[in-house]
Image 1: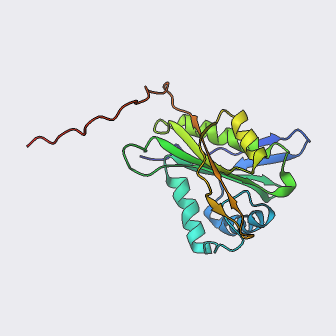
Image 2: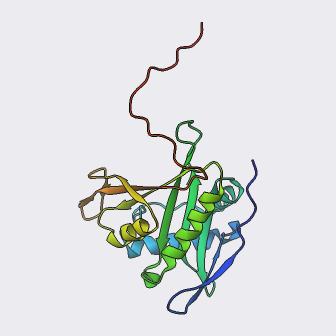
Image 3: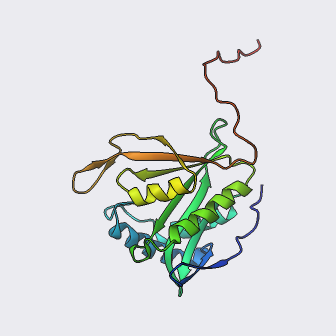
Length: 207
């Protein structure tokens, strides 16, 4: 299947009057994404990447950007202000396993100077709308560190519900641990199916 076509760039104005453009990054902007990732991971412990993790090389990042643009059930969106990348988010469908192929993962990060300005909400709403437009995606999943109260409150306000809390999931550079809060949102074009309540024997193969 082919992608639904490129995302049309969208200009938005935040409550404080600042303007942003939401658009997909191009492969030749791989260096901007790597600079962004290097900066955002040094500003907060709220993302998965640590300052000690090795970043992808430029070629790998270009190939990753292109692969996301080509995939029918994935998107990467950047929020740009005066040519600078200040937030990045994405949705990517799970693998080909039959029982989880209806799920997708949402990820999001925002530069510290833009916290509490509404950037995360604007980007999240676009990503959720993308997921709702894809017939294959029924469930959006995400993970947030349990100490990241502001992110959790944002996701709750967007309709995500708590789905689990594996403890202790994250080990940080100061040797402290953190639980990882799992959240999910039904985005399917049909109502959720019935919940399975009992195990059943696997179907026996016909000899």
